[in-house]
Length: 69
Image 1 (tube, rainbow, N blue to C red):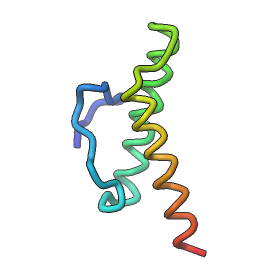
Image 2 (image 1 turned 180 degrees about the vertical axis):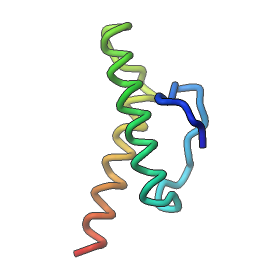
Image 3 (image 1 turned 30 degrees about the vertical axis):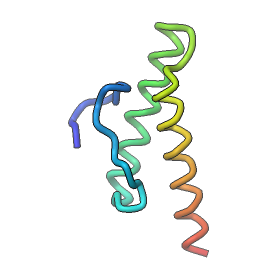
């Protein structure tokens, strides 16, 4: 995984988030959120890939919450 504070649409992203550990998933979420914030400010709207990644991460967090019930 990258040490960057953001994850651009061109950066690698896991194909299967269910195989990513909790801590790494939280780091990915932070990186994608920082990228989203940047895109809104600099470009006026998010890149579709960044938006898709954000949605995938939210879904994975939701599934993990459900698995712990």
